[in-house]
Amino acid sequence: MSLLLANMALLNPVSGAQLVGYWPFNGNANDESGNGNNGTVFGATLVNGRDGSPNGAYSFDGSTHIQTPIVSWPLEFTLSCWVRVTTTGSFMRIIGNEFEQGAELMYNAVPTTIRIIISDPGLLTDISGGTTNVGNWQWVAVTFDGSNTALYVDDPVTPVDSGVYSLGSLNSVIEFGRPVASTAIAGLKGDLDDIRIYDGVLSASVLTGLYNE
Image 1: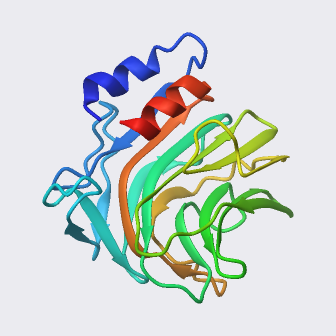
Image 2: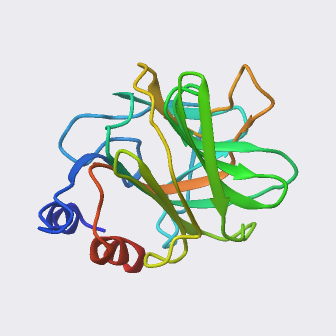
């Protein structure tokens, strides 16, 4: 989606959400939201984007990652991204900050679903669902309004799971594809494209626009 359309989505009167970071991966890991949250690439490589555009996505091999300067998640947020998992057999972190210090989007090995962990110090809660379509691009979104979490996979209207959780506010940068060093959770083996983080919860109509772009 163009930056113009992304900015139009910000102004949706139902959601009231503001764009914190937008990484379309147009040949680099720069943030095109205008907020300067450019990513630093650690070994991830450019590949064709989900629309086939050259150098339009980043590929991760389980040990590579991209680090943003964003420290902690907004107290209310929406995450939207496109992910293509290329292997199975282990838990893999897709997007997140330090384990048990905020929110982490993961690939769940058994069963093969998408999983979001919302954590507060000493309290870890999660929801999961959807069918992981290995080797194919899938749209994933998470909304969190301060207590209610919803996970969407290839459907912007009906969440695959939801729950009531508490989000920690410990300072830890948000990263793409990085493994969790202190656990058995591996880094992403697959590709990422069009990542967006909003400060607030997007309306169903805006989520639908992101999915259909």
